[in-house]
Length: 339
Image (cartoon, rainbow, N blue to C red; front, side):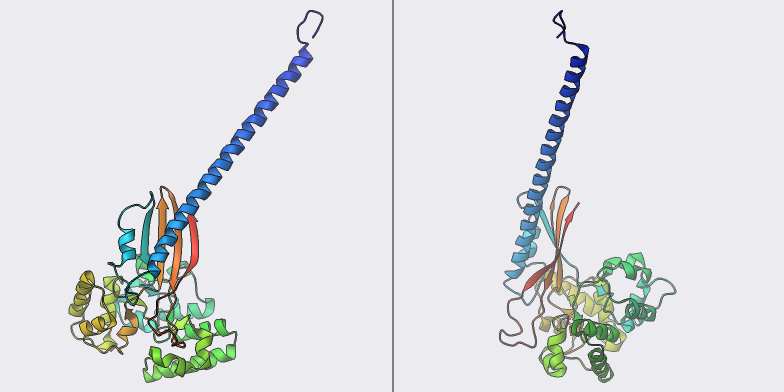
């Protein structure tokens, strides 16, 4: 202070600067505390979402009828009975669609699926693209070949059924799984033999026919049907049943019958064959089965979402210690949080 008892100007300025600095520190600390609280709250919500999504996965494993997945299963009912602690859950079959990584060109050429391609694009070009560029985990690279309207009918999630998958894709998969280009070529020759003979490799023949190769390529290459009759789109089902080479009588009527049956009951392989009027060894029963290979499980809380991609592991035809119809196993292969 000066002699009159007032604060000197220089001291006053310093005090004001100090006060401002203290206020800044206080504000910074409050912002930091708020940020920490928001981060903690977000992590808590993510944990709640993930836990609820995993509850759905557990219910998949508890299916009392594991040989068939349909809309009346307990897990489906759980997902449609409202919110669970404020969280909405949804489960979607994402493998009962046309797998653009695996589909053979003749299925695109000899059915109305050809209309899904962009004008001027051929199935042979798609096949060559996969040979040159390899397979894709997403649909995006393939949309250069397909109309945007085709997207809901397509997927890249699925197992490579040895009886349905493009021969060059099978060769590529073998090379990736075994690390042997020589072995891949030999494997390709065996696949060509199956095609020439128009032979369908059944579960019980898989291990014998492939020998040591079976252990190298399983579970990616197997004999699991691609489409679950309970969830496959009617358009896809209708085109498969009407495929000219199968010569199914009255395909439209039989497709309608299958769609009617699935509304009211969980179907079996025998039910599908009977409705089609074919043997259970028919190629159509390689396409059309009763289980789902890949699920999208989504848990949503307000504008936040946790998505799990869940794979059902195929039954191992090389191991009969538990039978071909043991309780299925599921694995979470992707986990995403949004936003």
